[in-house]
Length: 405
Image 1 (tube, rainbow, N blue to C red):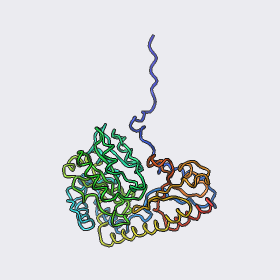
Image 2 (image 1 turned 90 degrees about the horizontal axis):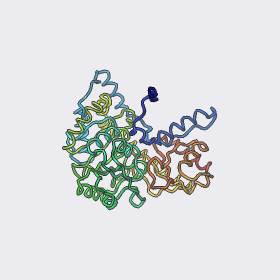
Image 3 (image 1 turned 45 degrees about the vertical axis):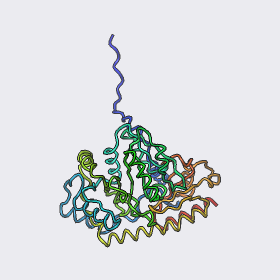
Image 4 (image 1 turned 45 degrees about the horizontal axis):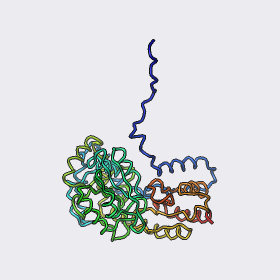
């Protein structure tokens, strides 16, 4: 008697790697808000979206015009894997004039957004089974990119006293036999706080002594509000790996264009990886990005930076007056990391996930709970994004006041 045929699924299953990747709650919250908005009557107050870190300004006019010109001129073929030489040279000049550091164009790789830059950096630096240290809280996709590639992300709890950044002593204590590097962000998402320059130097020394890699996410550096912190980590040495993007400073989010600054020794490896993983970043976006460094566009970027600082200066005191605790005022980016725990009882909830859900349904305000960024806060914090119109931020404060009494 023949054995029965095994039952075979009609569809291939997702890999264990894919199943292990946690959802990006920022996007999950956005989907929930969109679904809720579809249920609202026409006369209901519209939702105020203070959840996603997407600049409300959009790409500058000169950038849009340069993209249109590139298409008219037929500049749409592949570029070299490391990007247009002209754009790499323009970035090198920008580092010299804006930050006073010498970054040769040969060390710059143009990437498919900062996400693409992070993936290439992780692939070039770390092997499956390695460990990388990150702060808690931190941008969730960093640890998901690491874990999806077989690298263990280890979160180090941070405190307001250290500006929600790890210390050199923490890193030294946590460094183990499998540790191969540290990933930081300055200014950081979700806190909007930057790492103290002296602390960064000490961390760099600790990592270098152990033969590790220091990767610093600087995508919000162009939105720094305090000269003390608005300095690139690249000034510390040519062994730093810096991740950057055109998305935040220049409002080019959907254009998917970023860059890496690499030690010379890593450039060939990143080039080979880019050739095979992406071929190149968007050609049209690269030609358009050349316009970012024109004087008028840089002046527009500075006006936008000042506008975000003004939004912070209005929104943070208003939240504090409502009972939110903001232990460290953000010095860059466009986020406010607010402890809402004193308001939980009033809202009838026990953690920030419940608070965010209640705020959506009762005040029609969309924000992000702290669970997306780590666990060290104990579920107390909410991240508000200031990348929304000033009128929406003012309206959000009024709605919170009415809801929370």
